[in-house]
Amino acid sequence: MKDNSRRKFVKQATASAASFYIVPSHVISDLGHKAPSDKLNIAGVGIGGKGRPNLNAMKSENIVALCDTDWSYSKPCFADFPKAKKYYDWRNMFDEMGKDIDAVMVATPDHTHAIVAATALIMDKHVYCQKPLTHSIYESRLLTRLAEIHPVATQMGNQGNSGIDAKELIEWIQNGEIGEVKEVHTWTNRPIWPQGLERPSESMTPPKTMDWDLFLGPAAYRPYHEIYTPWNWRGWWEFGTGAFGDMACHVLDPVYASLNLGYPDQIEGNSSPINTESAPQSEQVKFHFPERPSISGFNLPEVDVYWYDGGLLPFRPYLLPDGIDLMEDRLGGCIFVGTKDTLFCGSGGVGKRLLSGREPKVSSRLRRIPNAKGYKDGPHEQDWIRACKESPESRVQSTSNFAYAGPFNEMVLLGVLAIRLQSLNKTLQWDGPSMQFTNITAGDELKVIESNHFSMRNGRPVFESKYLETKALSAAKEYIRHEYRKGWKLPVELDQL
Image (tube, rainbow, N blue to C red; front, side, top):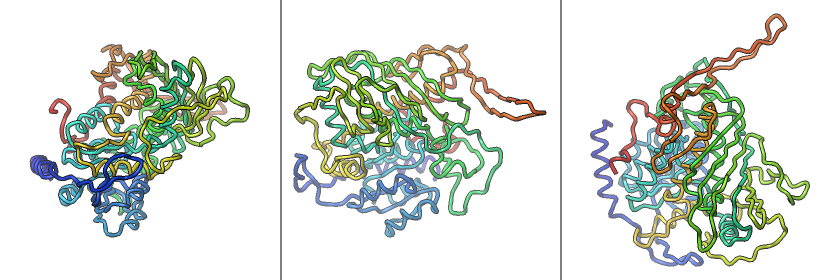
């Protein structure tokens, strides 16, 4: 579809969709708000990987359309929902079925989250989008703003956010159970997929069941190779955000929520060798957040938040018993260092405990989501469905809606930028509202490995490394807001809103 006809379609779809909401009819116990009598018509975009369990967690509704660029990888999900209409191109799906779709689940690779989600929001479709919410900070800001304007329900796919453990952790922290928090350490064992790779020199023929050009979408063209997809895409800068983008939206979530972090003002990162194509095998990032307004008398002083991945871990805190594995939940964890006590937990707050051994007695004040004990799919998606069906005037948004998830995702992506800009050898100063670094100058240059090879010649080791040198200011701007490939663009820009 040409751009002018697409704009006309989106405008018409927006006008017609704005008046449709499912009317509530009865009350769900324990939630204290109304629930609907009818089912949503949901479309899934990106269904071969995480999209499949997301949609199965939504099977209480009508799954009417399924879209993926790889129909072989998506075959199990097609079998789950045999009545759903199948598509390769989500744009064709929106063109043909826009009037019949109420909500959209997005679980594509990171680089196409924003363009699909933004188009759906403009059409006034409810959106569930996998983490990380977007591939760039600008895209996150755009989705946050669109969700403010359009009267829909939104949710990022970090399921631990809905968990009872996360709610209890927030209540403990904000009740002052460990005192003021000035230091937090967080970690994951990811990546468990290939990273630190150079771009393959050979090209391959895509499978007949795959549309490679649609997989690339707004990303710059490159020949197909099996190393990119499925699943491995998250290790390549062009398509994913590495271990940080994959797991920080889970592990950092209770940290961001309990400490009301907002924008950091300083970030710094280092890693194992990094190249121009792929995220490194292991990373460390330090965020510094300035003092924030207190919450019900609980002070929020300046705080440093540390991140470790790829096998790196913080040193064991005092009072943590011998034999306790920092990776006991196999996902990641957190250590909150307070002025009164230290809190240790796994991803999403699971397994939380005070290292003093004291058991907090804190009254519940945050909304609980039924059946959300533990770290699992289901309650997170169902809470979004509940919000979708409520009228805008009385809607209780799910807790990882884009008003929360958008700014949080910006923090996560800043961690990615700290790694990509590490060769500047400086602590980066960040102006959150303006989305720019204030201490990168026109004369600063990045020096990043393009290729790095080792060989033996005549019995002696030979190291051959090539570096790409670029202007840091222009590189940083590109990382903050990616340039899309010709023929692809966001449906609206921030300055138009």
